[in-house]
Length: 496
Image (cartoon, rainbow, N blue to C red; front, side, top):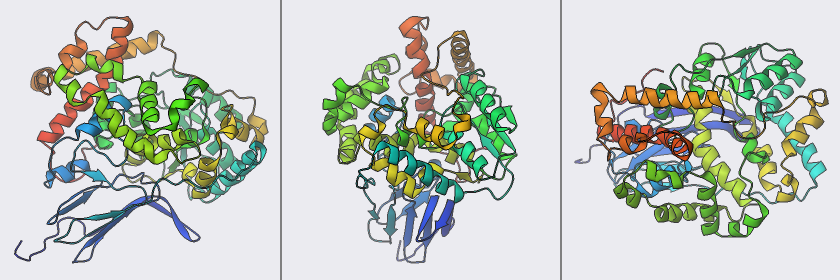
C-alpha cells in the first residue's frame, strides 16, 4: 500500500526434519524465506508436510496451520469440487483444501512471490522412474538391500520407543533395527478400532520373539474427542486417524525420536491395499474409469444421503466428484501401476502421512520414515504388476531377510465386526449426542442440520452401518463450518 511492504510472522522458517544425503536432501520438510523484496518457499520431494498458502498480487500468506491462513485474510469460500471428492474418499486429492482460495504446495514445489505479481509455483509431476525390468527374485533382493540402506541412514542417536503393529511395515523396521544392533528400549501398540484389536496380540508375540519390551497404550478416553482433536491437528485434511492421538501423547514424553512405516503397504502392494479384480482392469486404463472405480471401491458415496440433505447432495454431487477426480487420475496413467501411483500421491500423501507428521510429530518429535528413502521409493514405484501379482512381495522380503521370524503371523484381512466394535460405535454416538447439547445445540441446526437425518432411526443392519461410517464426517463438516466462521487466533493449535 503506497509502496510500503509489511511482513508479519517469521521471515524465514524451516519445518520438519531434513536428512542430508550425498548429493541430495531427504526427509520430510518445508521452508520459506523472505529477503525484503520477495518470498521463496518450498517442500520436499513428496510434499508430505502440508504448507498452506494463499496469495494475490498484494499479499501472500504461508503457514503449516490452515486456520492461520484463514485468520490472516484468505477468502473462506469452500471448494465444492474438493469437498465432493473428500466426502467420497475421506481425503483431498492433488493440492486441494476445503477452501477454494487456499492450496498446499505440491510435491517438490517451489513458490516465488514478490509484491505486485501473482505467485509462481513450480513443481514436478508424480515421480515415475523407468521400469528396472528385473525378476521377482531380484526385486526381493533389491528391496532387502535398499531397505537396509534406508535404515542405516536413519539410525537412532539415543534410546527410543518404537510403535509396533501386527502388520508388515513396522515389523520390517523393527527387525532391521535389530539386525543393525539398534534395538528400541520399548515397543508400543494401540488398538486402531477397539482396545482389543488383533494388532495387540500379534505385536506382543513379535516383541517377545525379538527380546524387546512391549507395552499396550490405551486408546484416548473418548473417540469423539480424539476425532475433534486430530481433525484440527491434521488441518482438516482427513477425517480419520483419531486412534493415533493416544500413541502420539505417549511418545511425546517418552522418546527423543521414533519411526513410522508410512507408505510401506501402499508401495509394496500388500493385499489390503486397493488391488482390483481382473474383470475390473479394463476400466482402469482411462482417467474416468479409474476415478469411478476408486469411488466405488471406497464405498462412501451410497451412504451420503444419510448425512446430507438434497441441497448439499446436489452441491457436492457425484458428477462433480468424478470430474475433479478424473483430472487427478489422468496424471497417473503413465505410471508403472497407475492405481499404486494415485494411492501414494493422494491418500498416502494427503491423509495417512498426517498421522505421523502432524499427530505423532506435532510437538517437534522427529519421526523417521524409511519407506520414503528415495532409492527405495524409485525401485518400488518402477516395479511392474507382475512382480506384485500375488500380493506377497513384502512378506517374502521380510521372510528372506529375517528367517528366524518367518513363522510369526500377521494381522490379515479387514476388522471383524464383533460385539466390542458394536459397543464402540454405540459409545461414539452417545458421546456425539452429549457433545451437541447445551452451548453446541447449533450443531443440530447449522450446516443444513446434518445430525437429525444422520441419527434419526439409527437401529441395526445397513442403517447402523451408514450411521457408523458417516458420523465422523458429520463431526468433520460441523467443525469445518465453525472454522470457517471463527478461524481463531494466529498461533499454534490448542494443546492436546
